Length: 111
Image (cartoon, rainbow, N blue to C red; front, side, top):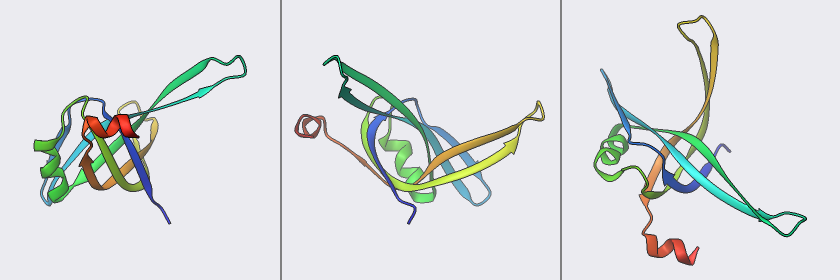
């Protein structure tokens, strides 16, 4: 089963793309984690994820999402590649979103 669930903050304003068959939005999502190392120091790290949403979900994202907003994303991993202008193969990993929900900041403190 190819299933992903992430909770994090929208990292940049969404990018809207229109196609003959509809529209898509893309944006980055920042997720944080921390641990205590052997020196008893807290180490924090942020991971960045590329998210894409299609159709009605994309339209909802246009009005709902803004940079910094905490959200939950459910979807699947997608791997793709293309050749750029410099004739180099670029490989990408994206999360194709099926469900995106806003998380109220009061819930963040209870997590």
